[in-house]
Image (cartoon, rainbow, N blue to C red; front, side):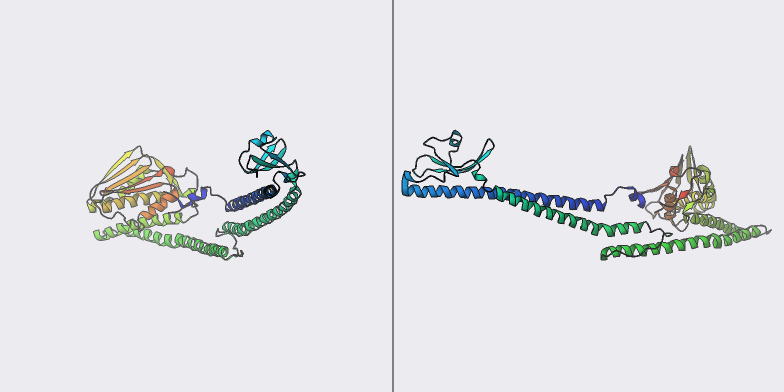
Length: 428
């Protein structure tokens, strides 16, 4: 049977860490994109500038060649080296035999040049930047680098400050709410709604209302337990004493004797139920309420008590004992469980019921022929059985098919002798 408190023991990620990582990752991605954009833009700007200069020189040479033929002046000899493929040309340039703009690294020098068809119609013309002549943008690039570094640093600081601000905005109210949760116990001090956001204030208000409801519930439960402990036990003792007096009257009619027996039986059931309900209402079941009980004796005792009911219904049972064990628990709990399940089985059985006790596993099987198998029992039906089993840590299982209904309780999960039973995980 799963418990609602099982989720408390599972590990869940921290929302604070998730928010920090989310902001950190998105900030890193933005910084990477920003610097990549600046780097690519600078390189592209340099290439476009050099390409435009070379294209301008090439176009000017074509124009001059059309007007002056071979007397046309070559591109600025202070900035460029000009070659014609039909004359003496460096070997590394001859590899570039298609018109276009090129870049080649020669040693430590990055060469930029343009290749185009010679205006004469023969061969190719090469216009190559001289060494360091294509570095005229270095000062501008240095200035641009400084500006972008300053701008990027400023944006980085702003993004970092914004990220810290947003993380604090989100985490602070959640941290306040988390602390409020530790004050939900009825005996903890009251708290106030103090966050600044409507959503978190609603959560705080809901926690505060729940704390008040829980405190009132515990107060009512304590008062009921205290009143029930005194106000119920007193009339039960009076009834028991009166029954004992009635039994001493000689020569009673058979009908009166039968009524006295029924009163005595009902009083015993009321005593057991009262004790069980009061124990279930306790935060801890003290060891003085528990004892080591042989399960076989408990089953046989309940069968003996229910024998008049079996005779009235003309029903029988088959009891199988296989190395029966014992259990440490309150006697009232064991009596209610066994009595309730046996009554439930007989109430809806169309034949004999099978009761098997193997070590600490009790199994009761009955044929129901499709009838409803939920019996009120002590007025609580299988609900009280589930409640007791959950409180004591016993494993309770029911199985139903078209012909049979099977109820089984495994008592092996009971606490060892001498250990108090806590209500911290009590849930049905």
